[in-house]
Length: 504
Image 1: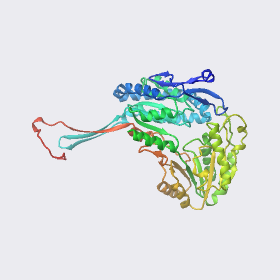
Image 2: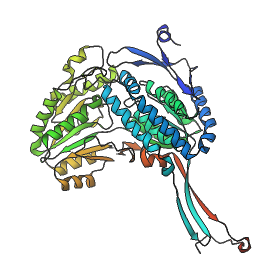
Image 3: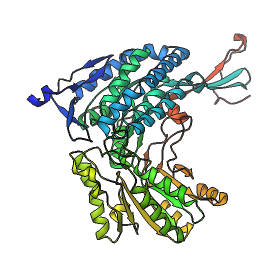
């Protein structure tokens, strides 16, 4: 039952069939401002009946939306793109208040989401099939792509707007109807997107938002009407979702965790490499699946690189995300902050050196969930701080003697999400992109998130499923391919032929 405190605080609801809907489950969670520790709202948690209502709304809307002309769908997506652009400040502020990232970082998140909406506006050309005339005498063969039906997305706390847009843009552009289950820690951005989608002309029921926790997720995974599931989160959860959803006959793309390495060769520009390491490790307080968490320093570059990173860390301004001077905000929850901080203790006991200790950050004295940027040196594979995805502002430096040793470490890691190399040697860079067993590679680029007209996703334990997210593979994921073989012969030439069809 809801407490008196719950009823006194604003409550965020589901969005089903084009309107806000209150759950009958009587379950809810709290939404906290990570910069202050204060409860800012409560969010209704869905039960199976709520998911059923959303799925029924999506199913009812599918037939008409699927039949909508491609040019009309593109027109709606274009209007949605413009509305998101016009409201980017409003969306970014909602992200900052619930996630904690700085406002400039949140604005960047919205901008990257807009790229995916722009890509989806080209759906008439993206859904073009192929046509082969005269495959056999009087026979033509062609392929078309058709939508799956009702599809669902389960998104993480660290990108409350961008990752939902990754999924919904291609899903609805391809003619599907979409159910979004955002992280219960950051529910507001999804409701803003739903409002804007309605203003853009997305028909009621085509885009629905179901708030909730594991109960809602389990209902989505088991619902017979939902044909596909997209997920972004930790590897254990991604694996469980993939196994459960595929067992229930669904198409799945489940993006898991990461341990992204940045390889710095002795010939690299030291200042450029240090700037990149700090930017990629501590942006968004390290709560990015593409954050650099390990620097592999080759040979004599290690000492000057560690010192250059240490100096830059000391100049990072930590504070609330809405404060203009802040460069790094808090972590998402108190529990997560404490877990990340625990790696500094274990690193010391395992033999690593704490070069910069974020626990001494003055901002941590408040009620917010702050941890300053931290730097560990002399880290080795096998240590807890190396093996785990910390998902916080902790950068580890592993010292190696050769390129070959560094490559072996990267390729032996169970994750294969993103990696980068810093060098001025073109031959070394090309060899690295050829050798490394990772899905996204940066050459003197520390966070190689692909642009919207490519696709996002890693290898190994960073991805469960066959297709990456958004871009061309996103269009493939949200459509069935259908091949049609056609003949319009002279009726007089028809005859019975029991042989296997062959080209004549």
